[in-house]
Image (tube, rainbow, N blue to C red; front, top):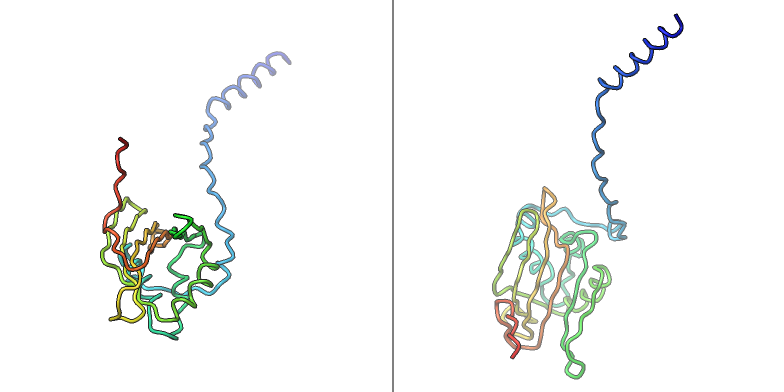
Length: 196
């Protein structure tokens, strides 16, 4: 009797194991959001006309940083163009030491650049080329810099922006630029020269 009861229990457990639903694998966990201190700073709400396309985002950058001498720039609007973890890379050309670059986080860059912009600064794009794939875009934008809207060109250069779409708007995730005194830079990226 006891043996028969044990057999029934064993058969019941086997049947339950066969009908139990198989567990599905867990979805991979996303990395934590950026802990950049910039999220604690005031950031303006920008319109779709200012951030709806990579082209609009680029035009907004030029518009927000440009203006006459002693005009205060709207730092909240400039800051709001950039993602929390965005960085700026300045590629320079020293007359003695040659080419160099400086990677700068956004806030130190703004602290350095704002006084320069407020001395009279008009940066204007001469062309905009966008390469886009789904939620990523690369913007190539040669520019000129003048102290007044109609003044002589003081500098020429190129901005290279990497941008990302979050489902609602575009953000600048990386800004790289290089300029030089009053000398034209081609509107297209320089091609690598073949080795002899």
